[in-house]
Amino acid sequence: GQNIDQPTEMTATEGAIVQINCTYQTSGFNGLFWYQQHAGEAPTFLSYNVLDGLEEKGRFSSFLSRSKGYSYLLLKELQMKDSASYLCAVEDSNYQLIWGAGTKLIIKP
Amino acid sequence: ETGVTQSPTHLIKTRGQQVTLRCSSQSGHNTVSWYQQALGQGPQFIFQYYREEENGRGNFPPRFSGLQFPNYSSELNVNALELDDSALYLCASSRVHSGGAVTGELFFGEGSRLTVL
Image 1 (cartoon, each protein chain N blue to C red):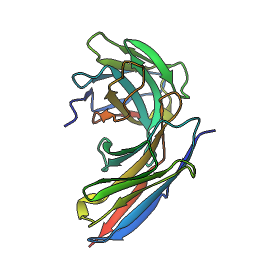
Image 2: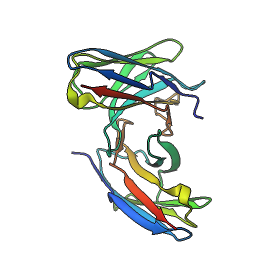
Image 3: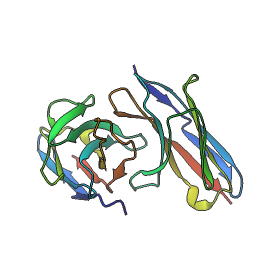
Image 4: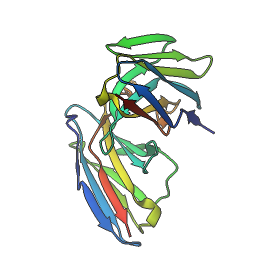
């Protein structure tokens, strides 16, 4: 079967750095996505990786290793507004997105 | 603002009833997908429509059906509602390349929260 694993919840301090990991087993691979979802709101796109390596976008970076079936989302200079759920999703060989359950990130002052 | 709008935002139904949820896609997007998101879970793929035809379906029973219209708006219909159908239903639009591949960035609407009593 297809499976996306990510931690259920993480806590970090304002101004610090946090890394959210995601491992996947899917039928084919056409890219990995990270989305941010604030409570009660729709997910919003953060990043896309299809090749191995690091993609940087401001305070957020995303890394992919296809051979290991592994990705992480790195958030720097954490702000209180970064408190949200972070969803990892993989596009499989049928171009369907398989989603993880999300990691709830709690930022403390 | 993603340009994707959904209606209604909230609704309450009873078991056995039927519901229709609506979605207007972002301009220039020709693909719409529907997701069910239970509380504390990631979105679960229901199905996807491209050029008014279903071209992908997740593990949902036939009582979940949909339509896409020529203006790329879409409907999700659920018949014979069950208590477990209570969830946030998200519509997302995206673009398809000429080769058929979907650009993975999805633009989500705010969702329709369905409660089944």
